[in-house]
Image 1: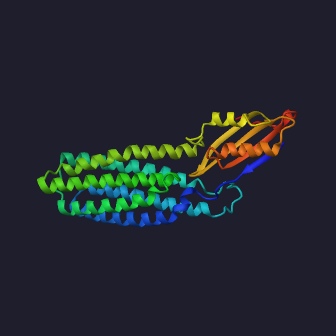
Image 2: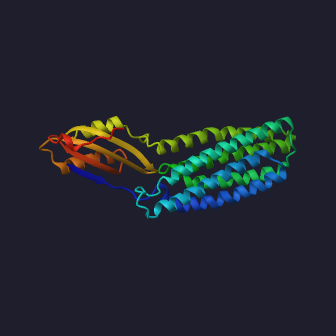
Length: 302
């Protein structure tokens, strides 16, 4: 019987972009504070809804940075065999829930304002919306580079992009109110922001749950992997194959390979690692079982 271990990165993919996350966190924190102050002083629900949206993004970025810090430290608890890598995914799920809560609040408040329109100071609203667009553009540029590598950065970059769209809506509301005095523009834009938030919250929640439920990564065809492993010279059967995501950029796999009597175990392990690595799985534990030792494998009953 042989065992092979393949080890990859030792930190979440988002850890490579810590500096960008810190700068983005500072920019969005300042923006949220300004939008809350101006939104309350002008009576703009569109601006307050965007401020709530940005504040949730700030909270999500702060959780991501905390998760990176925790995951980067070696675990001192023997029972945490994978360390604290999953904290980043839990933070993403919490962010999705908060986004959904913000959307519900904005919708309820907007409906109330459609019934009873509120006067909004158009000039401060317009100026603040222009500033929000500039901040969101800078934040998106900082995060977009790492969006393909880390779940948290992908979520953050899409949220910042949506923030920019919301800021554009607030700008449109400010211009309309400024030029026409039409009060309904503000709650209508707020409703648009809420509708924009909902699918993003659902998408982030589904992505996080997929990781937490240890489903195979979307880009890995488990049946195709099993076929490729089974075609390796000396491999007679592949079973007990599991592929999952530990956290962003960290895919893992385990498999039992039944091999022939004359199989070269070193070559089999090397070939199996190459098969998995070619599909983005850099951490693998492989068990080789000689064909003439049927009792060596004890499959779990679940």
